Image 1 (cartoon, rainbow, N blue to C red):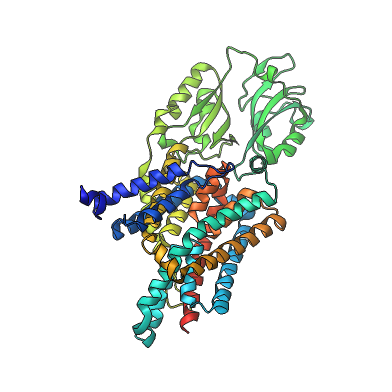
Image 2: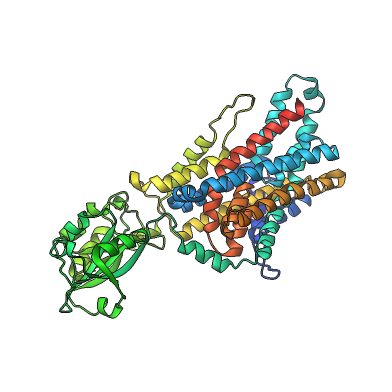
Length: 562
């Protein structure tokens, strides 16, 4: 039992890790004026336990830290992937420019502090890496120093000392990097008197990149479509729309087919995209008030029902490939994906987990249900193959070195950047390639929370051993330096983003946490402010920021040894 509690074996390491995570999560429930640090407490519990001698095997901790971070960022990538490219086109350039400015401001602050205080630049690079919670930057800086001084007098004299100062500066500044960014987010919320509910509503009302659907009723008054079939009308314009009901002047409600003829005075219930409303209004002639009593009145021959696509074989197929209307006489009026209503366009690519609204006779709807699966149990089974294959591919991609002129050490996206990019690509392009990437929201959340918890515990247990001694031996100044490098650039970017670019608060949260490559702050923002919108901005800036953080760390080391 002594080995279990005070050794460094596998059993001891796992038990210690579990205790740190459980205790940290328990403390994370404590709120002061409605605010909690959430899972960030795991980091501080890990530091505390490590300081008092409870330590895990170093190689195991290194593995757990990297694997936990991979699980976290990969689940984020799967979550934001479907809307990522539209988000990047819509605001990605602005966010990435601000993120680059954030990186450069941190570099300037680091260099100025080194000049003013006389603190060695390599040590300050370690402090900077901790202040922006960038472990790959620390590793790249250490390797660059060894490569740049190999065989030289400097290498022989103080290479071990410099490597130690880099690591100590990182360990001391890391907690400040987490708390400082959280403080900036809280100050931003207070200064601008932000109502998070209103901020979320603004994002809800904006175009999220998915062709969201709206229902509108029209009365046919355009002579150009009198006497034409729905197929002929559909071919006359390129805008997406679906007619889900036709009400004749005598009050009869019909389920339309492609051969249904439209006449003057008919009322039609149309599902179309928000962007197409004006064009569709001109096509039919006049929008009329929605009369739910009219469109939803009981009709034994006409039923509406939502069906779940739970057959993985349907992933990647177009809606028209199912031939639902021609084979079963059932009309698909809407497709709901991740809570967003889409226009049931024939060319819409379906995914497992989609929810389709069908209208038709009950017997025919039952046949369509068997066609698409419509079993809740079909969604509960996790699709692990794309996840682990994606992680393997992401690690490979993140390990590819990119060489640049004048930089002796190759740049890599690392074990976090690579999997994040691959997860985004798989979740976006996977269904088009008939790869099922669907995971339930609860499964994604479980993967994400386990990942960040393991990561924070491993970082805390690894940093705690030298944490206090580093501070006592002069490292207390590193706390101040780290706070300056963390708070000043992030606060300036938050102000510029809000005042000059009118960014949403959740965009600012994602920009700053991604710009600081700071998973704990992302987890805090999502837990404290109750939405996943932050993840989209985080994923938008994270890859470029990771690349820049690693690059500038190496450049500063080269300046130091020049």
